[in-house]
Image (tube, rainbow, N blue to C red; front, top):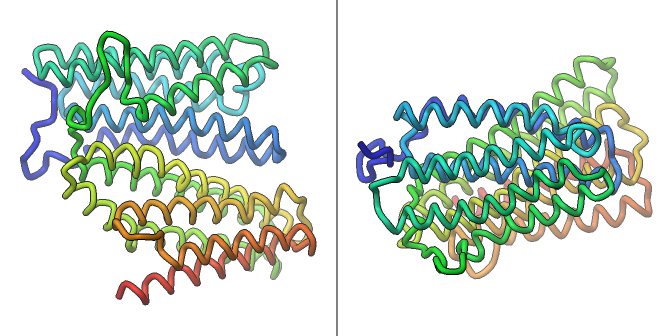
Length: 384
């Protein structure tokens, strides 16, 4: 009996409860990432957390591709997801100490998830479409190469670990671009990536919800421990409104446009790779960095370091850049939305001014929220 999804049925692209249960691990992972960045808010810490975030993202998105092909309602597939859940939990636990004493656990859990999943896909596709199975063989080769580098870096000295893991990330990033080319097997084609567009769009939207939920969680937990003075209350309100505006900008128009584009495309695999596998990295990263900025504003509303201001302004900037290009590609327009381009320009100017004028975190946060509000209102008025 085939374990592949049966395409063409009314609920063939429905996201299952077991997939939502699996995502709970990544709620924890996102929290670990934001807290790790808060504890080491400098250039080195940003590079390290950025690398750990990318590794976490690739584990999650490859699992999304796997459950897009295989039916998670089948017991065998469900068991594989539970195994990935355990490995993902170990990976999340090791994130704060991945560059100290638990690098081996982070690297080994990445290797276990990436290679174990693709080997399971190969076994599960036995007897199915030969081209699809060959596609899984190519993916296995690439993920074995990157997984080996993740594991080697985990067991390497702390000084060499960054180099090993940057090499591993480069392999992960290049795989889809190179269509998983393997000597002797050639490369995959877009026809091999016969994804269910509705499922892919919904899964990535759910990860955006995870990131936004973590942002609200951090804001609420921090605010609950502080005195309710005017500056703190204002910082809390700005953080909440900022999260609402990010939701608005993504879900009010972006989600619908992206969903329509991939569902009605003749090459949904291309859009799944470009719009969802790659572009959503910027969107989710912006929300995570924005959550770090919100906590910094709550804790120190009047005085902030340049690194704190970079997080406060950089989060919305990353988010707007990601959503602008996402909507551009989804709507096949000549340019990204003008509202988003103006918002990006205003945030860049704000970032430059914050250096010379020594803006307070509270003022910088208020300016960022004002920019997001301007972009959201402008886009809504134009489209409606």
